[in-house]
Length: 136
Image (tube, rainbow, N blue to C red; front, top):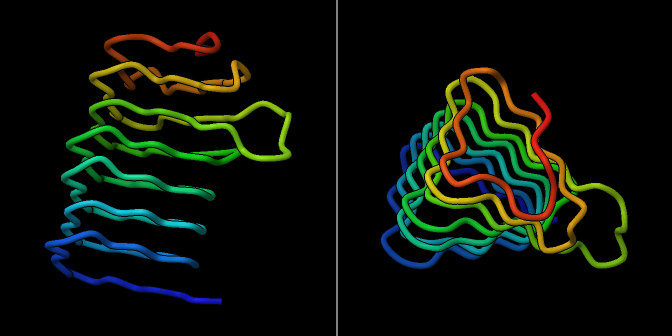
């Protein structure tokens, strides 16, 4: 299984990882990650896609982020919009956790219609949730 670690790295093109990614203080133009993804203090500039569990902290997504996962956690992040794709063979609830002062400018869209957003009191979603309701 591939494990990629980025520390202070600037990726000026498309980053594709089939395996686990752990990135700290990285700037990534755009990415396609097929595997568990951990981002700390990262900037993702263009539309990107994560297939697998995602935990992001103090990171900014300047364009749409698409995630195919049972669970995604954002702690003190800024997102433009969040699209939760169906997970093949999984029919349960897909959970998005918004911790700290996470802010999402656009909507959160769940393709499956089975989405749940768990949001801290300081988290903000400007354009609401499509495909489920918010529990605070």
